[in-house]
Length: 305
Image (cartoon, rainbow, N blue to C red; front, side, top):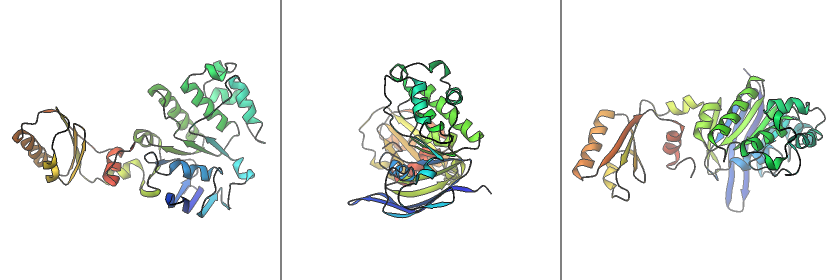
C-alpha cells in the first residue's frame, strides 16, 4: 500500500453560525490525484486554505508528511508543498521568467527556472510580460510558480475555472504528467468531468460535510443498474406535477431527468403522460449515469449551483 501524505481528522472551521467545514476526515495517498468535488460554497476552498497554512481552524487534526500540524503549517513543511490559488495577481510588467525567479528565491531546494518553463510549455514566452499572456498561459505560469520549489504535494484550487476547453485540456495534461512523476495533487473542482477524468479518488463535499467518497467508477456504480432518461420538452414553465409518479425525477427548465431501474416501463409511462396532456417532446436520450447524476442524487441540486 502507498503511504498517506496527508491525513485530516474531524476538521472544523466556523464563521459565527456558518459551518464552512463541519467535521470532515480524509486521507491523501502519495502519488495520487485526489479531488475534492462540490458546488460553490461547499467549503472546498476553506479546507484548502487551512491545509496550505493560510487559515487557522477551530478543531480537528492534520498530519502532513507524517508530522502532526498544530495551528498553521510550519515553514519546513510549506517548503514541501506547492500552491495554485483560484486567482493570481501577478505583477503585469514583469516577465514570465522574472516571476518564476522571484518565486524560486523563496525556496531553499527549488529547481532550475528553465526546467520549469519547459514543464509548463512557456519557453517561447520566457521574456513576455505577464500582461501579454493569454488566460491559459497565465494559468500555466501559476502552476509553474507552484512547481518551482520542487514540491512533493501540490494543492490546486479550481485550476481550470474560466479557461476555454483547449486551455483546460492543457492543464489536465500537466496534472497527468505530475502524477506520472510521482507527485501528489490535491485538486478542488466543481467540474464533474474534470474529477472523473483526472482523479484517482474523489470526496464529494456539500454544506461543509463529506457526503460521498470513492473512485469515479465506485461513485457511479452506486446507482446500481439504474439508467438516466433525459427528455427535452418543446415548452418551458409547464405544470409537471404529474411526474411525481416517478420516484427519482429532476426538472431543469424544459429538460426532465428520470432515474430508473425499469427502463422500458418508465419510458412508456413518461411518453404516455406527455401525450395525454398534449405536451410535445423534442428529444429523448437514454444514457449511463455520470458524476453529475451522482451529485444530483445525493443533494438534489446541480454541481455548479
